[in-house]
Amino acid sequence: MPWGLNTAQTAEIEAGLLRAHAHGDTRTLVSLYTEAATEAPPDAAAFLLTQAWVYALSAGDPRAKTLSETLAAMGRA
Amino acid sequence: MKDIDALIAVRHPIGRASGLPNAHYMDVSTFAEESQALLLGQWAGLGVAAQVPCPGDAVPITFAGVPLFLLRDRDGDVRVFQNVCRHRGMILVSEPTRIEGAIRCPYHSWCYSTQGRLVATPHVGGPGRNSDPKLDTSDLGLIEVRSHIWRDVVFVNIDGTAPPFERANAEVIARWAEFDAPLHHDGRAFSLDIACNWKLAVENYCESYHLPWVHPGLNAYSRLEDHYPIEGRGHAGQGTEVYRQLTDGPKRFPDFPGLAPKWDTAAEYIAVFPNVLLGTHRDHAFAIVLHPDGPSRTQEHIHIYYATEQAEPDLADRNSAQWRGVFEEDVFVVEGMQKGRAAPGFDGGRFSPAMDGPTHAFHMWVAQCLGA
Ligand code: FES
Ligand SMILES: [Fe+2]
Image 1 (cartoon, chains in turn brown, orange):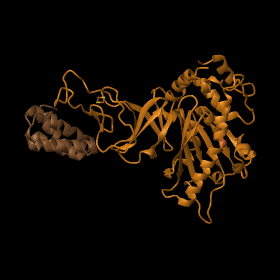
Image 2 (cartoon, protein in one colour):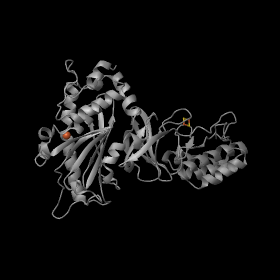
Image 3 (tube, rainbow over the protein chains, first blue to last red):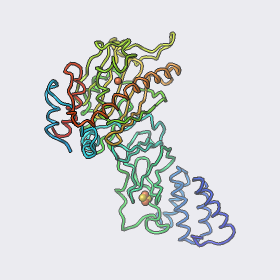
Image 4 (cartoon, rainbow over the protein chains, first blue to last red):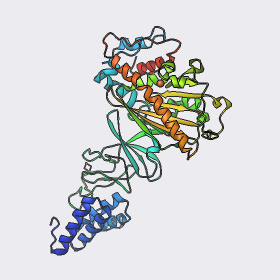
């Protein structure tokens, strides 16, 4: 795993991410990157939340705001 | 390369003037020089606002070799940007699309608002770090191009040096002030791909001399003597005094409001230099935007407009087909003139003092823009 996770749940998220990337399913990308971040150590979480944030921004998804606030609170704006 | 003596000969009085020499239709370096002086340095037509009806709609258009995109921003304003990411220069919009949120560069996902502001630089300071103290991103918004909408046509001054649009085109704007009413696109845009230099399309559009020979159908009701030439600053064309509306029994298109009685039977066709060909009538209008594609190829994009939103569909189909027929009748002459310019003995040709005034006016404008 690129972000240093483990477990069967992680494998499932990764498969979901690949599917969502293949279909250009931006909303699912936001959900899955956000979900993956919950289990990850801080550096990996910042990476994953950034991915979620950018996809939310590009889709005009309202979650972009919270994600950017979370990143800012982590000092990653 | 341009031949200054030949350009000076273009500017002689019409009876003694020569047309632009062959190089202006065939030569790659002359084309590049003209692109700078006539297209990038002036107010050129890029497209029409109707191409981007909803906020977020974006259409990439390469014009005179410059990658641009036309966009309706979140507030509903039409804007034109250079189609390039400020990071490593990737193209941002590669096909017509609707941007739901931000414009995301497909390479490293820098994101821009529809107003052009840079709003995200993901991982720019390393993974999960979205800024970098060593990189100032405050002036890295999209590069906006000066644009102005008139008669739904989106005009752009790409090099930013032209006088304001309203000043550059004050005469033609005043001439058609009566027609300053909302225009409703008919949704039937069409394009023609033509093997000629874009200037030949302008030259042919300007004049009525060819009508009886090339458009005998038009001339069945519109005789040569019913046409008058139009020449003014930055534009030239022709008018007719015998325009007849399309009808289907009692059905006809509604008129634009508040027109003077002369427009009951008059219509005008004007080339706004460099590359926009406009027509207006009591009940419909059209805009043709020419996209030069190298010295010997041109795309003509044709848009028809009415005074009301829902033009009678059968009649609008007929009108669109009729205009397509007329514009297609012109293809063999503009392509033929392009081929003719491979004859080394052709010296730019002569102008009929009585009939070719508008064409000569366009050539003089070209020569002047090129510094003659
Ligand atoms: S080139 Fe656009 S983000 Fe890198
Ligand atoms: Fe014609």
